[in-house]
Length: 440
Image 1 (cartoon, rainbow, N blue to C red):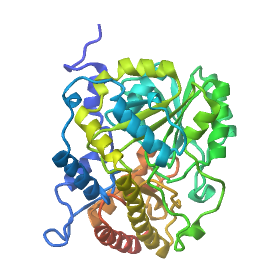
Image 2: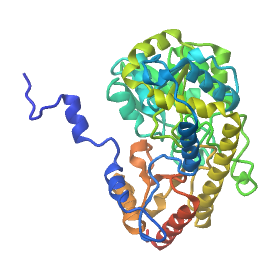
Image 3: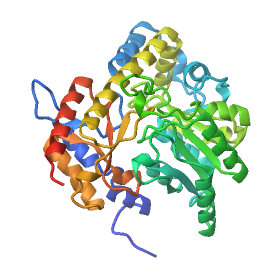
Image 4: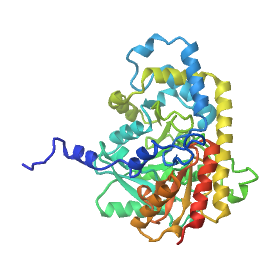
């Protein structure tokens, strides 16, 4: 019998010895030294964690007023449906119909879990066997690896769709030719292409898939018995591409539509949608995620698997009460988009002034920026050294490209919603000064 110098299992040892994110140690350090114009003007800027701080105060005020003015119902203190309380799912379906998906949504096609990560974990646990493969266009969210792999044993395959940013512009790059090639490659390795995972708007590029693209990919997946999942977690965090100051950066390549519309049209057990309130509604700490699927067997299995992952009842109740206020929701979405646009324009104007490439974002909280010309060495080590040098000289913590699994070195994700706009202006001034002075 193999022995281990540990009290943990193999997977426990791996989790203890390998950080979930490469930037977490620096994040914890930087979080103790945050910038304040009065008390800490030389402090740090956390631009690496995908949080929307621009509207957090609005949400906080709304939820506080609900707790003060509304009487908590008895069901909050009791066990409830493990897919989510029926009244809450009804309010969520209405939000999707009116704002996110703009098509009919049956509340019985929804399942709620404690955050996006829980939804990803439970869904992959049910759909895939250990060793099955989830194909994800690169670059993509680093934590998909852990969310799908730690408990479900799903392997991640990073589909390299482009190398240089200018190869795609702001157009989502995946097509069925790439899927055919990947399917054949995985078959040759005796691996099962089980899931195609798309994020739209994308993390980190901000690309959005058109209805035509989504439908073509969906038909391919149905034909090949591959589950297609579209994560629309940034579905209401959209850039106004018609803004006069930025519209020249975009080409019109077709209409965007929520994947829910394609799901309604094709009515397949292989098509699914994820959503959560952490980004669009600045609620990352409340842990409220959702699966939408027309696959009734998946929902039955989810009902049984979701018990340890249920959203707390008080969270469900507060969010449902917030959603009932349609005037608030309308105003909030408009305000969020206006604040989002203002911060986005501040960042790209600074990059444009020194000719730093980036992908023009159509949505999400990010700018995916190419700093490769500032590398002293075109390698993983060179990329890490630039990342650390930026932090040590400016106090700005970005997300390095390594975890996004893109082949080109020197790419970084900047979360432009992580701090208020006045602070963001200070951060960008520091970064541009640093880049102008860096020798390369």
